[in-house]
Amino acid sequence: MVKSRDEVLKVLEDWGNSVANAVLNNEEPILEIPARTLSNTIWDPKKKMLVLGPEKVRRRFLDLKESKRFMQTMLMFKLIVQAIREGVYPTIRDLYYNGKHTMEFKIDVINKVIRENTWDEQSESNAVIEDIEVATGILREEMGLSADVKGKVVGPIIVRSKGFEIDATKLGDTALSLPPNPDDLDIVKVEANYVLVIEKDAIFQRLNREGFWNKESCLLITAKGMPDRATEEVREEVK
Image 1 (tube, rainbow, N blue to C red):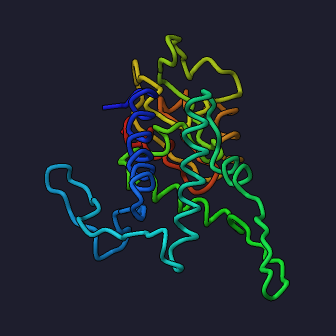
Image 2: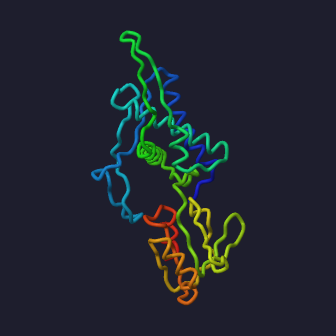
Image 3: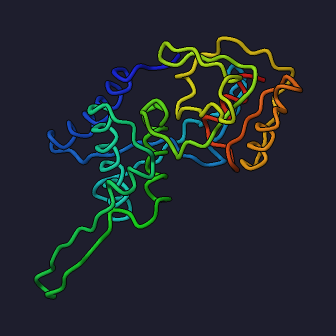
């Protein structure tokens, strides 16, 4: 079931409050995050999919090996909650730049200035977002976060978005761009014989201009290379 923005915000705020309460009670704040490892991956026969098992990593604020990752998690958490409260929908690239800055402090004993970046590469901030996802059970799409939107679809499909019905056969030489969270789209009707997934956007555009989907009565989907989550979910939905 898709969570509303208010429900997502409540879950995130509860998680953040648990950390704040530990500090207010003069206790060391510790983040417990499900381990994203092969050994902690198990098969759920009911869901018929691989899920994370019970093993957790404990990220301690007072552990020198974990303190930076702890700080990065809290910084990213702040950015996400702020975005939801303000009603904006940042990309994960936006969050990387919004949180990237250099902290500076001076050690008087040795008269040396130390500089430390919040994160150096986007892979660091991406990993923190994944930590928050598994710790709270909220997908980044439900938080309103997205990678660069890449997915497009054209052909005999009608979808509903924010109360408006969109017919993907009436877009001329363009195509329907998929939203970061495909749950925002309701599939009203599909009359395709099959779905053709095309890796290269240039090939997708050519087939679209030539009306291949109309001749074959099929859906054309592309993600311009490696498919993102939204494109994968839509492809599975219409299969």
